[in-house]
Image (cartoon, rainbow, N blue to C red):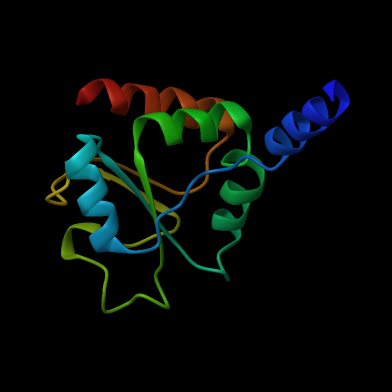
Length: 130
């Protein structure tokens, strides 16, 4: 029984990740009900810096645990959701990270790829802003 429990625990930890929300209205609703800000990632499948962030930064346990605990993570593909992206999340450069309240009022942002240690420092400062 103990072996089964350990196997399950290891399996869960290996596949843990950011709990992305892909629907803007759902993210706003969760942000308001939980009183947690939104961290919106604007991305594209063809963007090399976006792939870097997803594969090398956002998949690190300290990063995704911090994001899942302190933000409502919203993911929007800029090509698939072109007409659904709110004006406060529009801009140049990818990936773009916007930090906002449930009304989508942006209070911080980050544009481009960045190493995990620097990204963690940045999002910890942003969390302390609210």
